[in-house]
Picture 1 (tube, rainbow, N blue to C red):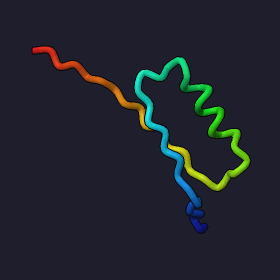
Picture 2 (picture 1 turned 180 degrees about the horizontal axis):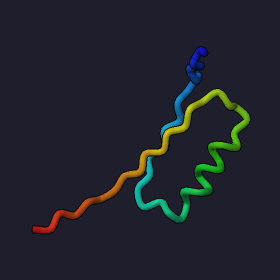
Picture 3 (picture 1 turned 135 degrees about the vertical axis):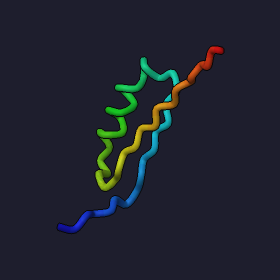
Length: 50
């Protein structure tokens, strides 16, 4: 079985985007061009308390 390599990669970094994340993902997945991979990078702030 051959693995197909997508033509493009769509990378969506997010930070504090809870209110808009669903709509942004839906928008990307609704595109007419479909030969892509979709990567969502969720950035998180970590507080270190000593």
